[in-house]
Image (tube, rainbow, N blue to C red):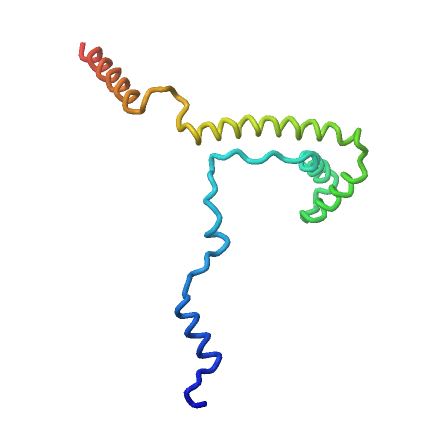
Length: 140
């Protein structure tokens, strides 16, 4: 058995032949567009905006985010549907606004600029004509 390869040797050979770089999670994800609208907060997060302010007034020395979150979650669970209604309405309003912004964003991505049907060169030509016309008036 002097000529036989060990399992470790065969694994090394396999790995060198199959040296394919694996992509990390970050490499797989597409780059985020900074112009894309942020998703709207849920009713709970709208509630938490108000709750944080109230909690901070009552407990000015508290520095723990976890304590505020825990207290807010407990309070949210204890609220009735009628008490949650204004927060739900505000969340729905923000969601509608987000959907409008997303439609505009998607139109912009699909069609480019929504300025006009003219190409950029035609628009630039008009700008040049206006600039040259303005210069003639300044010479007087």
